Length: 99
Image (cartoon, rainbow, N blue to C red; front, side):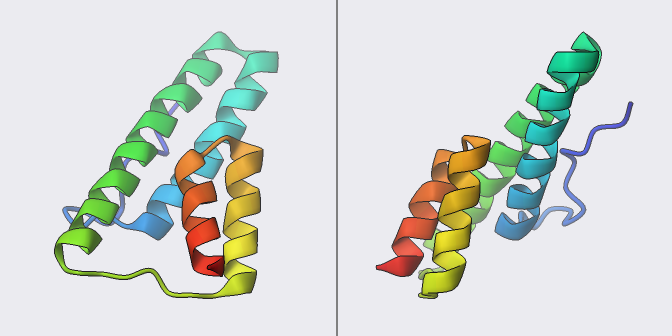
């Protein structure tokens, strides 16, 4: 089974890709908990890769003085998805977008 955690963005980490990869990995991990230990472990590993990509993207954005765009609707969606998938970073970023 191939890993969904590898970034298509090459050496440029992407917050959007990281979030998408995290959600996909969380789904894989959950399905694997019912079907296959290998799938569950792959999902868990993919989540770690996605978290690393999101951290790298945030660090790159912070070092360039990047500021999060304010969008209440997007913030609510991001915060909700973070809660559902257990991604604290998504929840925090979503709350910041709404502020």
